[in-house]
Length: 161
Image (tube, one colour):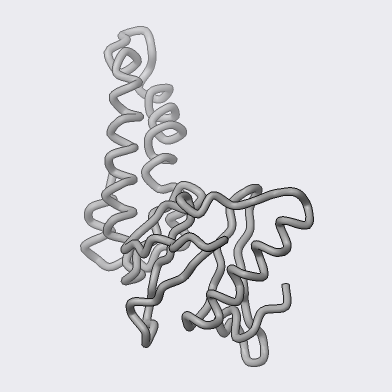
């Protein structure tokens, strides 16, 4: 994409414009003009392949922008500004913290634990087997993508299981 003022600084002389996975995309820009340019160019690019975006499914998350109330559009429709959104199963928040993500992970891990309730009461399953199932099914849900979290001491305490 040929985008004016698009992307964010990654390394000196290197800019990161987007993150892509399957049919999910995140555009990264450090100002409203660059973001609108990226949105326009993306809309043109996908039309070449007979595709289109659903603006109602698109969101804008502002982080350290000077203009905190930009009006960004995709195919003539205004895009909703949000404080957080879910991308590839992880909650991304405007402040960059992980509190919302940890809360979400705890809820999902509790649900995974509850769904396996029949297993926890089995007398025939050894504690070692239950432990392995717990680690694979519950703990894995709790700690999904934790490698990318900027944790504080209080966050680590909440996650200790």
